[in-house]
Amino acid sequence: MRATRRTVLAGAGAALAAPALGAVAGGALTKPVPATGELVPAVGLGSWITFNVGKDPLLRAECRAVMAAFFGEGGGMIDSSPMYGSSQAVIGDALAKLGRPAGLFSADKVWTRAADARAQIAETARRWGVERFDLLQVHNLIDWERNLDILEGMKEAGAIRYSGVTTSHGRRHGELEDVMRRRRPDFVQLTYNIVDREAERRLLPLARERGIAVICNRPFRRGRLPDRLEGRPVPDWASEIGVSTWPQFLLKFILSHPAVTTAIPATRRVDHLRENKSAAFGPMPDAVLRRRMAAHVRDL
Image (cartoon, rainbow, N blue to C red):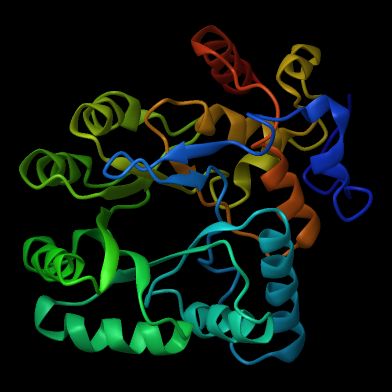
């Protein structure tokens, strides 16, 4: 069962239609937002680095093709930030050219001191071309108390639907835990994958306890995990959960955690997007199989 990240999935929907992948409740896995019960697709789309392509028309076309495929497979959360260079403008351009398709859960961030937050939010909305974000987050805890006050005020006024706080690279978990205990944002975003599992100790259990949705960034460690596993066979027993490629294996590990709401792998390739989305189909591993999956990758 040789499979790599560079395996080209045959046909526009082949990965999603394959009988081995099955379905969850008749379709792709969705997870509830604890604050409201709203269901969101478990596999979203990140934009860090991959969508920072400036005005290059060919690279923008690649990003637009990825977004078209994303919406074709049901859409979900698209996540960006003012920190991500031209990514916001690239997303906005693609949304406009695609006719603003249904299925978008728009998520962006505040990446400045609170005194400048409203101006930055207005510019972010202009770049996306949206009137109201589904989710705005305080990026990497910058001035988090005052910025979260602003976002919660916007939520109360109906200007956004959800508020959140993020951290990345596995840093500052103690501070994020403090935020979750003191304020209970609707969402937190953190690093969690089959290798970086420190969040399992306190943050993920606390999110379940407090009713906070969890977005997982860096699910592939910026591609280093699939690269490390490339050329190695996916274990035969992974077929029990409809897995035939390493990206599916890595994503199903994340999505099956009961505290996780969505993962946001980033890509500028349509075949990778479809492969990522296919991880939301078919059975999910239970606790026993999750331990086996983590041990297998650890020992490779």
